[in-house]
Image 1 (cartoon, helix red, strand yellow):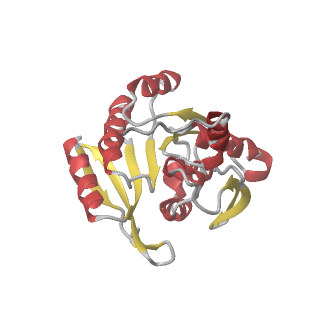
Image 2 (image 1 turned 180 degrees about the vertical axis):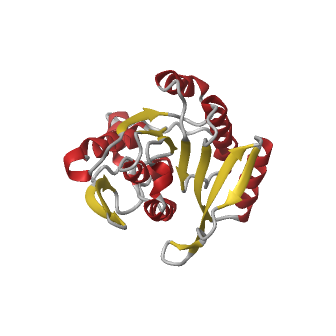
Image 3 (image 1 turned 30 degrees about the vertical axis):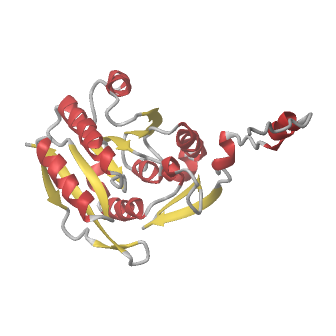
Length: 249
């Protein structure tokens, strides 16, 4: 015998009232704090988060250990940056690009996430040439690795190409590594400059990623070498970081 469940008047309305609709902004933390970073005699002030957002795609809101590693190296070896044009991949809040602006003539900082690009633009705007001794033309551009339409737009804006491609702590998802090296190869081929190279501050978090970085570099015709003296412990001594340079064969 089938028993029909009685419908209580207003129950459907009550069920709808019980549903909690969460806006996208609920998962996004944009409560940035102004922090000061010093690399040798060079001081930067910028907006960033102290801890990660609940959205893994917003890792760029933080300053990562690899960026610190690269910045200390650049501050100590800044001569080769003088007068250079630089493009940074996965700039995040821009701590590395902003440091480069003290030495370079042109710095293009890129990221794929609109929320991260928003704070990146804010940080570029915070930099006063009079206060920070910045000598570079700085700009931010949206660039998702492997997106050739976005890459083409950037190259059309900067037809001379770039002397240096930078990346700091940007290799932590296997699926993104081939796309990263696709983009790097395109940038290095476009520039046709003898000194054009890709400098990557790499933090080892998984052996599979270690192997993949080397394999993708080889696959894309890039010669990989470790920057002497750059290997050190980062993140409070819990991880190993190193700086690699890549040039086309």
